[in-house]
Length: 393
View 1 (cartoon, rainbow, N blue to C red):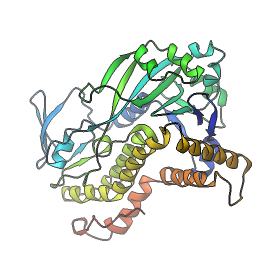
View 2: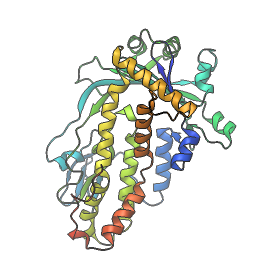
View 3: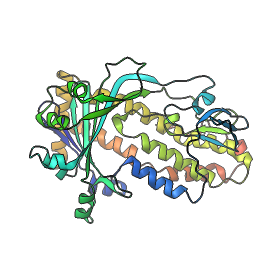
View 4: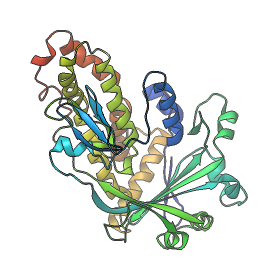
């Protein structure tokens, strides 16, 4: 990842992910297009479940449980997992009242360009040819951009040592650009709208020449309002037959790029626990075990994502200058392997390593296995007290 100054393109930090991630956490980073991830998950699930689309839920009875569809059909189940996103219907039933997301005051423009347009410009070509994500940091704004490919089993970019030419060639079809900024439209405006290119460019006047060139290539853009929710007291309905997952219970702002990761961890914990299910009586206790195992981690990550905005969007001035100095020093320390106790970048370098360790060392399956060894095999599930089980320091 390459972090740059908004107005000059000057390097603030350069973070190597590939081989270091492999060394520290046992796997390299894969940057996967969301549509490709959806397809892979769909293909894995399809042989084992009946997947129905176009079935909008308009109401439910969480005590049975049943779901009422817009068509009027009532669907009966033993368990409902509310993985229905930021605009969740099922969340209302867990909370016990209408509970709507709130505008953050920020929005994100999104656009995708054919990489051939960048390759034709000598100033933009390196953005495609270099296998890295680039982030420009500016006052109340930042831009993230990277190569993507729309193919069934492709990675956006990777630093794998194997078959680099094949991987790089597959990852140079399209260039994705996400532009986070202060939203100047009224809160009641639609969450997602097509925005004029002129208005989008007006948000980034004065940014470095390559940004101006990139934005000049975009004919139109989609704008998403960034919405947020406060952490819930519980993810599980009191009757123990409905639980929330992913953005329905802990939506993540994009500043730490952890939303999908937390949802997949939710699912991994649930899947592990429910693979041991032997009776309907275990459903409620296992749902509460799921919450006990993953609640604090997901909630802490949600808070961190929210706080990271301030770090990325500092206005020009003393705080921004100090941040930039520390980022440069941390990069230099990492590059030369400095071990001196007073190097300027040590604090931010240490903090980054600690945060990365928290995020990337976590193994949802191992956490569920540990819970089962300590509780599931030795006691009746219905007798376990869950509220005090997990506490992340």
